[in-house]
Image 1: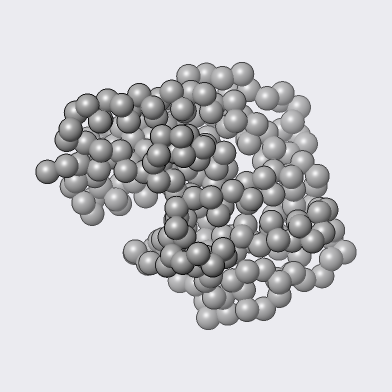
Image 2: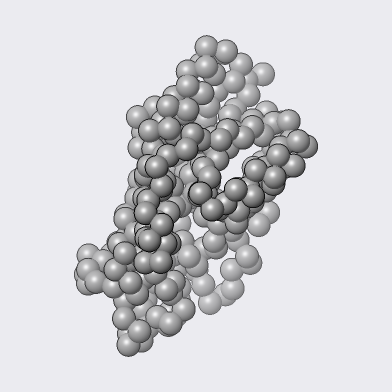
Length: 251
């Protein structure tokens, strides 16, 4: 029996890492033919992550964690300007390490004959890493730690940027976001969208959402005032619900 291996790349930070590992645990609990490898990035100020990962993997024989080598972090001063911009720069600095490790895993599994790498699943902040999947001819998926409402926002941003090309302003009233029946008050949008560096980071990420094979996000019992759009590009695909998760397959 062939075993399928999924490789996850979460955003550095305990919140995103916990969500990723909990989702990975659900996957292996539901199918004993799945193995999971998680590539762990460590920010300079999150040294406490080690204690959590060690305690988690001690009880999970089918989830392997690999610590990525250290990379030169961006200037700490950027944290005061935009945490989103800092994170995206940090992740980009890890691209060579991710490529080398994923390539080694794919190569070793190919020679084993019993395990096959079937996909690369990246946190939405790590969407730049999908080029590794394309290069190695692996399906790529985005894992959202947020819900379908946030997904609607990310799918809406590129279109909005093409029309306006500027940050949101507090004086703006409402915006019509993909997936929402009613206009959304600008006041509830992420604060980063009101600042140049944060806005540019979100746009850069959002523009890659249609380049993946699917998107996974939390389903917190979406209310009747919200509709879920499965694919903004109109190329087919579908939406599937599994426990508290929505799976969007676009191509």
